[in-house]
Image (cartoon, rainbow, N blue to C red; front, side):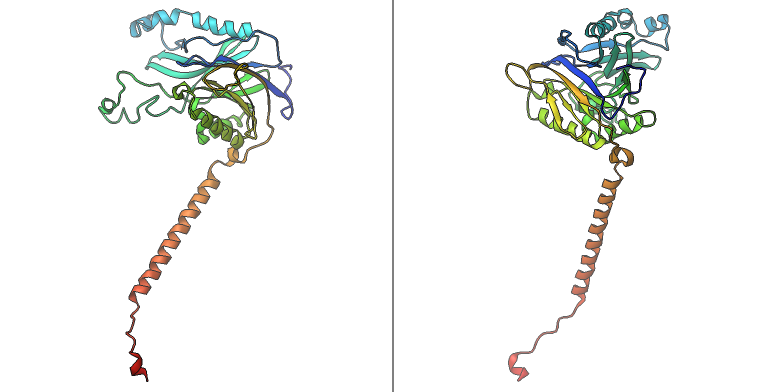
Length: 338
């Protein structure tokens, strides 16, 4: 596909592969984006999550060494950046890599759960930092407002990650991708806001979900997470590619149909196994009613239900009061009526 020509969004597929090794403890997950299938050797994932040190733009080298003396040598080390670029160049494709990002600046140091976008010709192009964090798994709610709250939890020190600021749209050869990380694909309002925000400029063609479900050890949560992701595709009419440590990695279309899932070629397992998936992702040209109008329909139904409940309650209460005020006269014995 010529990147200078606008793609026909009614028929053009995006070719996406998921080379990774599903393990626990967590390895990194990665999505490789291609405009055509190739015979390149698929890359297996590394034994640990990537730790990417973001370039510091608002501090001089001297200020970095003074403010972050232990971090300065790592910022100067470009091995991870070179490794990211090497993966993209070796695969001959753009890659989206799950990484732990350390970002230092004048306001301090932040840690992010990130998806890093790398192309073979430009290197690291952009990075998405997870916006919606998991309470008690990635941060302690109200910790900054209630002094000493952390002492009632098993966590000590600087626990947790920082929240990202905004969605990021990653474009490669005319196709636009937007990542959601881990349980973000279970939050309909968040995914809708990402897709809706993209329509101001150009629509999102494919959602990318990078997750680590290794904490659940192959339980039914993996199936539930996959099903929940399918709901987001139906709501937004946007296909999704999922690369999930320990499974289930899959391609879901705009109808919520699971078109393919990564399975081990020998065992046929899709959980806690070594697997990869190469699949063509059909783009969906339809507009979504939910993306355009949001939750107003559901909110209206809820409001009408509450209103009907209140009306029924007060009508019944009024009827009971009227019954309580009615005087019941004693009846005369049968012999007195003769």
